Image (cartoon, rainbow, N blue to C red; front, side, top):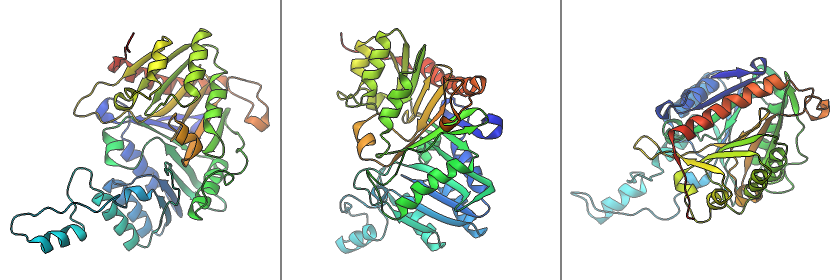
Length: 384
């Protein structure tokens, strides 16, 4: 853990199994354990039993818990296959599968088992109604209508799963600020009412000053995060570093990077080897523009590079759930947060006045992790 903005911001990178600093599962559990009255949780997938246990224990402490989950991780896309085991007839095999003994590495049974426990313990759980992807990953702690001493918001790239905690490269950020909690609470309440898509999120939230560090939160699709990312990139005077899971050539972010490279800004990035090698990925155009790209080395311990992370100069960090794709921008439920600014005299309405040293400290923290991933990885060399 590293603390910034006088304790208002905490930042974490994981997992320790892949050489990063933090156990993100422990970070999420400790955040949940700090709840006194309320927990509002919106996450695409929950299969980590330790995190689920922390939620259940919070409920037994008297914490009021509400949740929204992605239904695609709860409902099977098709009927499960029925195969006979020793001593079974057709009826017995079918009944075994129907009543929850689904087999296979991609089984959703852990997710459904956790859902049953949550419902059994009087937790208000709803599945999303978004026909696209419900991709949020955040927890609002002890904030409903007003601030409490323990009010805080946790978000980032990590789902609450065993793989995202222990095998995938991810980040988590905690903001101890009731104004940011309020922005996420408005989003959470809309989701619980089944409101998704354009026109539901309202105006772009204000930027808030956290001891000299501006923080602005945006939600997709209404706030068009892709345009915000491009806007922040175009402020670069020296360099842009990024680590991203999915980066498609259909986004405008790759075009902005190529333009910046032509303007002699240094652009480097770490990408997931599975996603980055696809024919539709931005990798190939970026490589042809002489932008250095790195893939983590494949190993039994490594799952995915799952970050959605960018650092601009010594000033700005952009993080959250948002991959650099057109569907993420246009259809999915997503969030990003922009932390910092290159402009010391930024007006108050935009989150100023800015403490450049505080912004630089946060930028260096995340850039160091990106460079660590690159140094441990392999340079991508495309076709000539």
